[in-house]
Amino acid sequence: MIARRTLIAGGAGLVLAGCDRVIRQPEVRTILFKGEDMHRGLQRALSNRDALAPEFRPDQMSPRFRTNGTRDPGTPEYAALRAGRFADWRLTVDGLVARPLRLSLGDLGAFPQRAQITRHDCVEGWSAIGKWQGPRLGDVLNAAGLRDAARYIVFTCADLYGGAPYYESIDLVDAFHPQTILAWAMNDRFLDVGHGAPLRLRVERQLGYKHAKYLMRVSAVASLDGIGKGRGGYWEDNVDYDWWAGI
Image 1 (tube, rainbow, N blue to C red):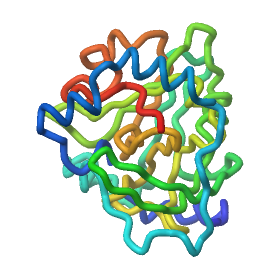
Image 2: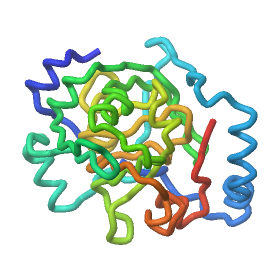
Image 3: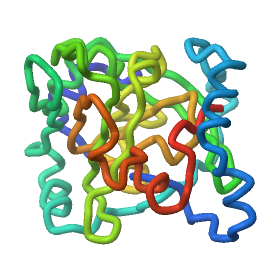
């Protein structure tokens, strides 16, 4: 595990959203992503959402871990943050919270850290095992103080799709799952650009497109109605992916 003081002192040498390529065949999308309400209901009924995703030994880590989705946001704003080694980057935590936060990488390093070796399963059909480190999302949300009306957590990212920031969302069950972390390190190194620097979501019980990269904002909301087209995520709104991608 990378020492907390290394994160605070080092600032970062760090830099995601979605999967490698959109599965474009209509019949494949229909099989994988239709019947959302039935799929979500059956998955939740048949699985224990508090159960832990499998974790692996260091010798089981993949020699190569592909990048999924965006490989570099490529915006002037992101380029400036990257050039400054993310010293000026801040994660905004807002919405239905009692204490809105703006957190630097050093601030995130001051939270208790979790390191976990897990498997990333991409909807495109590939998997890889890697090590991730960062604070639990639940600890960050507790520091902000969720209001009673909060039901979902929305993630807004630095990469753009169609000229607008990439976005994703999860509910509070997944937000407070012990393996849901805000990862700033992968395989004992700061995240690189392709894997989402300076910060990405790891929500280990879900498919790869839910693991939003290049995080800029975490917002607590009461409903997904006002998020994008109302289904809670870019791929859900535009390519008929399921909102709940539990595995």
